[in-house]
Image (cartoon, rainbow, N blue to C red; front, top):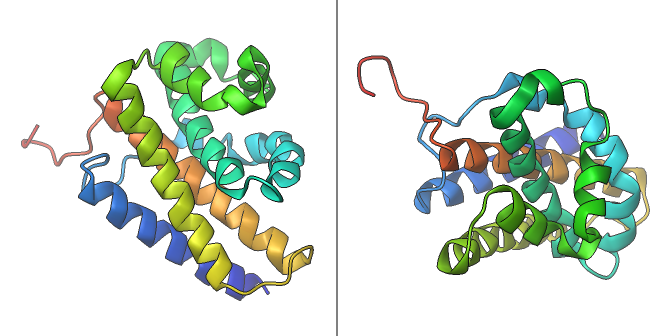
Length: 182
């Protein structure tokens, strides 16, 4: 099972990378932020009960929200990681600001301060990523409610979290360019 889930996660990673590159949302060298990456398992544990519950009726939202969470984590990293690194309640604090249903607005408008067309563009980008991942999940033909289905769902969330991290880093001006080319 692990091999199947790993291959699925790699397909998700490549699909998101190609799409985000085509949209100019990330650099050729995918942005890295080990501090944010290290928070993944903690975020996943906190998010999974809500995300799994919502997946049944709103699968694209359940997936897309994790990309917004990745973006939020970069915001927290950029603003004051020394204080934020100690926190263990990132997801619940984000969710509780305006509720689960408005997590997109919390990240786009409240944290990143996007308005109008800028807000629409980011929201559409995340929605397209979520739809692409949902399509990949559907093509796996995994039986719902199985260990395999959960493994693929978590793998999808992981890649969306990292995609959100990459988009957030680029949006905040962090670009991965070789030395001497900046």
